Image 1 (cartoon, rainbow, N blue to C red):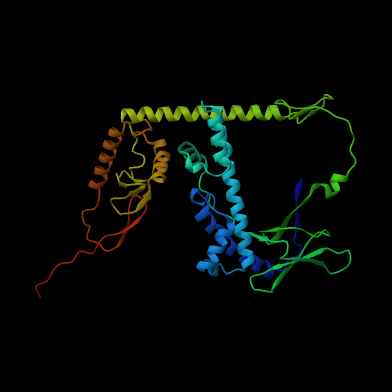
Image 2: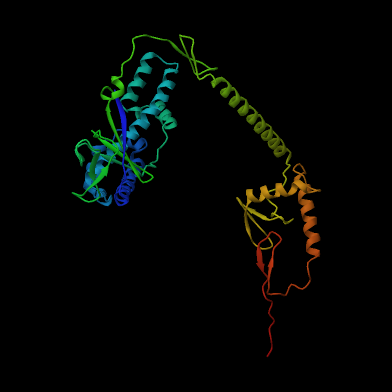
Length: 379
């Protein structure tokens, strides 16, 4: 059995880290290209070597800005991820096939098509794979895959910590990384860059680890997974006794939360059927102005300021908590009437002389500029 061991860089020069980070970002672009072109049904049956050869012929590889071995290993790694993603979808499709009310021979045929990646030939399998296999997108821009023959390890002193030399962006220029271990990494490496430090991931046989050589007894015990506690062994010992209380508390909390949401949803749907709306996202905040709604934007008709409609609605809800005339349950027709009446009263109280070039402030808080009036002269 294989296990993953991780070694960490120690006191790595920031210039080296920057070079490795730039390489990882460029290789992230290669991963994104692989996922974009072959991460869906169109890539089924396509081999990574075929893609590598094609990109070398048509000149695509020339724009990657990294060494050939680096992007080729990245392509292989990305195709492995796509394959794993597709196989995970097949598990769900197999479960669906096993529940079909068809003959065993038909089920065997469907299983065979799935195994051979020939499911596009069957309408049912194609439909189910489209349902369960969603197109993936690459978000990895901090990893570098290094083949086993592309790096070397060394020490500066006998018995000292390991150093590893990996390819950089330029040919025959290696980046040396000091590690915090005396055990040299082997096989294919995966370098992961996080917070100024390099993690070196590699696989080893579990039998070679020191923990596998620890003495152990020959006695057998039974272990049962439960609800009130995590585990109970055949000796009667309980492990993790607080699990039941934690699960019950979380379950009760989610139940109450769901009930409150359901009640609010029922009230909203009932009001919607009656045509009752509180006009919270149609009124301009801090005013009684009915704005102009365009999608999720609310335009003030006095100053032209643009509010996010939901934000405006939230402000209005807060303001109406102390409004003597409008409550959250006031019918929308009455709300509109009240707002129009208030706006009319405020307009009637405005000064008659509007011929001014000075800046004024709209009631919604935005500044407006009244245009300067001009008169024509016969002179």
